[in-house]
Image (spheres, rainbow, N blue to C red):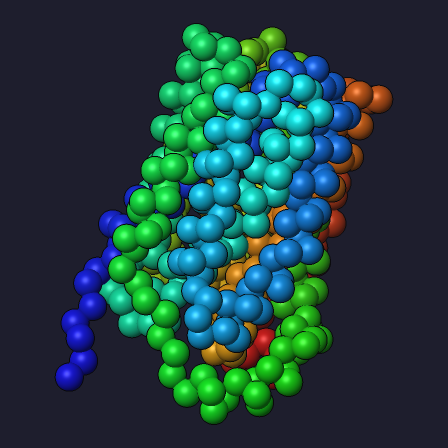
Length: 397
């Protein structure tokens, strides 16, 4: 008799929301905290770049382990990451005294944060692939809601309590996340894995060779994501260049997240009426528009207004790429697919963190946004050419 499986939409959504609160405090407000301990923009960019680069190198092997080892699950990997981030955050708050130690601990925390991103998507896809009822769009939208509320709330908290509140906030968020992940009811389904494992593993050694068109698309996405990562990483500097402060940064980030939330919630409607590959193409156009208009707008108020472009940029891409990666790979490659999709964003974050900070130091915020606009345009062209309609596996194309 088949066991009736419970709908996990709400549970998954709570996990996404809690992670997003931890993410926005650690990532979006990283400049606020790291400047307070004595780092400049170039140092911050270098730290975030190194942390992200390490996570890039780790993501595919971790995905392979999840796909190939029946005893390792996405849930288990995320639980371990959450525990480690909690411990590191507590050490930053209560133990670390020197700039060097604090910087290293913060960098490791960012690395783990970036490492976990693709496997959060895989956690939702696991529910679909293992037969659990779930509305993935609603679950993801709760993540956007958590990001928006966390950003708005912490923008005010940071003004009231200062930069040192950053590690306190993300420590609490990831401590709570540990409990939610532990009790998440989705269990890994291992069917015929012992029979198929040897055959499938022979194909796994060259993932990007096996899925060539997906590889080209992800290359284009690195360029597109670069623009998004520039804005996310250096929102404070952009807002300050328009006479704003950290509270304004929180408001701008919250507006973008709310706009993104709308798209994520109604994404099933888009899927019914538009082809997925065309949605991804449109998304790239809006990524380009957002960074270009970020350069054009003259003040904080108009910067608030253009956050609405998030609705059709990251709002579509954040969920569309998850479906695209899951649908176009084989059964034993799904966690790896999410890892590579996440790796594209992580690589972009590395480049944005390293280059963005140095560009600001040497040329200023406006020039950074101009360069980001050009890079986003190039990436959009590549993605437009590489994506294909979901009729068959990419590797068969």
